[in-house]
Length: 407
Image (tube, rainbow, N blue to C red; front, side, top):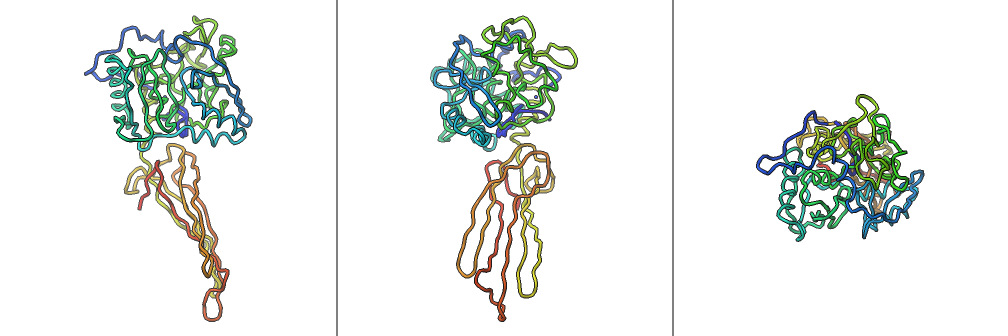
C-alpha cells in the first residue's frame, strides 16, 4: 500500500512504486521520443509561465499560498482551485479543514464522466485514449462519456498541464498539451484525488528539499498538504517511482535558480532519482484501489440494559463492521477516510416525535467502528402504562455514496 491524499484525500492525499516502467496499450502508438526522464519536471509546471498574484491563506495554524492564474488559482504548478474554493478557504480560517474536505471529493463508484473540448485535435484524442486506457487497465477507475451527469471533467487542449484535485462539482477542466499522453496520466491522477507524492505528511523522513535553490515566491509549491491545511491522507510508504512525484531535478527556471542541480534529494540510497513519467507505479495503482475499492458496512447494535420491573432504563449503541464483499464475510481494514451517515430517532410519550440525521468521519485502518449511542428511559404506572415524559431512542445506519450497507 502507499500514499495520496485523496479525497477525501479524503482525502489523501495524498499519494505511489513499480519496479519497472509499464507499457501502455500496445494498440496505440508509443509515446513521443522527446518524453525522457530528463524532461520529467516540465509537465508539473506551466509552460509559457507568467507570474501571478500570490495570495496568502491562513487556516488555523497552517499557512499556504496560491497563485492567481487567469480565472483560477494555481498551486504546486499544476493543481487548480476555483475562485469560490479560495474564497471559502479565506473565510473558513480555524475550521478550514472541514471546508477542504468539501472541496476534495471522490467520484462515486470510481466512475468519471468526461467531455472533450472542441479545440482538441486528433493528436489530443489519441493522448486522451491512451491515458484513459492506461488508468482503466491498471485500476478500477472508469471514464465514461458524459450524458447528463452534473459532475464531469472536460479535456481541453492547452499550452500547460493542470487539473483540480478530485471532484469539485459541476464541470471541471483538465488542461493538457495535446501531444503527450504521459502528462495526461499524471493530470488524471489529480482529477481522481491524488496530491503530489512529495506533499505527503511524512515526506521529510524520505526526502530533503533544497530550499536555497527554490525561488522565494515559488517555495509554497513545495509544502506538504499538512502545511497547506489540506485534508489529505497518506496511504502506504513514500514511493520514489510514483508518476505523481516531482523529479529530483526541477527543469523550470521560473521555479528554481539552477536547473542543473538537485532540488529534491533522497535521504537514503542514491540522492538523485527519477520517478515514472509515463506509467502508474505499483504504489499508484494500490493507492487508487484503496481510494475507490468497494467498502461494505454492516450495522452492529448493542444495549446496556439497566431496566427494572417498573422502569425502562437502557443505552443503545450503533457500531459498524467493515467488509470487502457484499455478503459481509471478508473483514476489511478500512482503506480510506470515510463519511458514514446515521440517524437518531426519538419518541417522547404521549405524542412527541423527533430526531435527526448526522455524519461521522471514520479514519482508515480498522475493521470495526463505534458510531453513536442513545438513551431511553420510562416509568410505568400501576397498570403498566407509560407515564408522560417517557422517551425512547432508536439508531439507524443510512446509505452513502462511498459505501454499501450489508443487510
